[in-house]
Image (cartoon, rainbow, N blue to C red):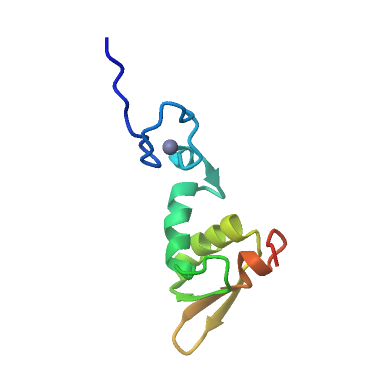
Length: 109
Ligand SMILES: [Zn+2]
């Protein structure tokens, strides 16, 4: 039987030497939880909160109260910082801020 070279689902590489544990494999994120949130869901939240051009930069986002818990979990998980939450009583919206991954305890400063 001829061996058919299949491209990796995660990185697209069609290399017979490619390891089965691809570093781009994110399937584990669906099975891993942080504070009752799926890591794959936290990633989606974090992508909306962080600067797409500089995800390690500072974060400041306004949101309704029901979004605060998930936003804080996403920031904690991906930046290793403790986000601050403020309430704008005029608009009743919350401001969630973080110094971001780079300036946080896990950052490369
Ligand atoms: Zn791969």
